[in-house]
Image 1 (cartoon, rainbow, N blue to C red):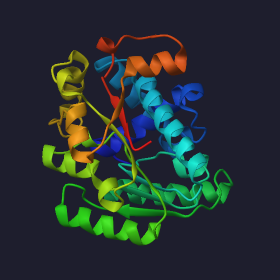
Image 2 (tube, rainbow, N blue to C red):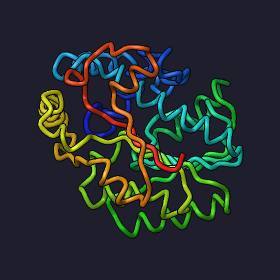
Image 3 (tube, helix red, strand yellow):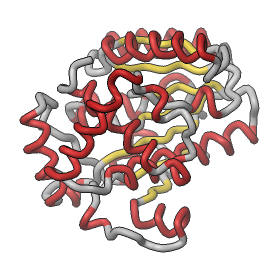
Length: 273
C-alpha cells in the first residue's frame, strides 16, 4: 500500500472511525486496514493530526453515523432498498446493515484493495457473504458515469435506491461534483441521496488551509469544490436537509464538544428521506 494520494485518505478515514467507535458504530472500521499496515496508518494519522487538526475522528464518525442512521431508516421503510455508494472506500455499510444488494464505486486501486480485503475478512469469518458489486471507475468521466447509471439500473431491477457520496465530491472538479451528486436521481428520480460536502462559506477555513498544505506534501489533489444547499437542491430538484458538524454533535452527543471553527466543516446533506 502506498501511503500517499487519495488512497492514503481512505485508510485515514478508517483509522478515524476506529478511534471513535462508539460514535461511528462501525465495528469493522479497523479490520479493513490490513494488520501489516496498521502501524503505518496510525503513524500517518498522528502526522495528519499534528499538521492539520486532531479531530478527524470526530468529524468522520459524525458523518458516518449520520449516513448510517439515514440508511437504517431507508431499510426500515423498504427492506429491498439497494445501496449505491460512490467514493465507498473502506466503509462497512453493506455488512453492518441488512442490504440485500449493494454497489460500491471507487478508484481502481481502492476497489482492488477492497475486493482483496473482503476476501480476507470472509475467510476469517469477520464478515459474511453479501451481494456487493464493486465497480472501479473514473467519476470525472461523463461516459463512465453514464455507464455506471445503466449498470446500477440493471442491478437494482426496479428496487428503491439509496445513493451515498461520502467524503468524495469536494475532491472532484465542480462540474463532475455536481454530476456525481445527481447520480442517484439519474438512476431513479425517487432515489434517496446522502452527500457530504464542504460549504462555500468555509472556503477560507483555517483547518482546510492546513489540510491543503498537507495534501500537497502527500500528493493528494489540492483543488476543492465548495457547494451551497441551494446548489445541491438545484442539482437534485428537491428540498435538502443539511446537517453541520455542530448540529450532528448536538443530536448525537448532546452537546458541541468541538466548535466548527476547529473542525473540517464537513456537512451531510440528505434529500428524499
